[in-house]
Image (cartoon, rainbow, N blue to C red):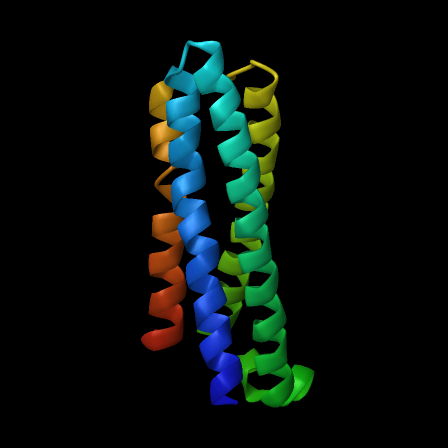
Length: 142
C-alpha cells in the first residue's frame, strides 16, 4: 500500500511540474516574435505536454489502485466531503490539461487568442488547485 501511495505522489509531482511550466511557456510563446523562437516553443510545449500527460495518467492509475486497495466503491472514503472535493479538483486538473492542449494547438497555428495578462492568470490555476488538493488530503476539513 505504501509503495502505491509513494508512486501516486511521485507522479503527482511530475504532473504538477508540467502543469506549472506549460502555461509559463505559453506566456513566452505569446510574447515571441521571431520564427526560430516560435518553432522552439511549439516543440518545447509538445514535449512537455507528453511528459505531463504521462505523469497525470500514472497519478490517476496509482490513485485508482489506492482506491481499490481501500475497498473500492465500498470504501468509507465516499462518505467524506473532503474526498468529493479532492475528486472534483482532480477532474478539474484533467480539464485544465485538456484546455492547455487546445491552447497549444492555437499557439502552434500562430493564433494567440488571449492577452499576456490572461496567460499569466491562467498560469496560477494549478497552484490554487494544488493547495486545494493538499488541504483536502492532509487537513480533511469536512
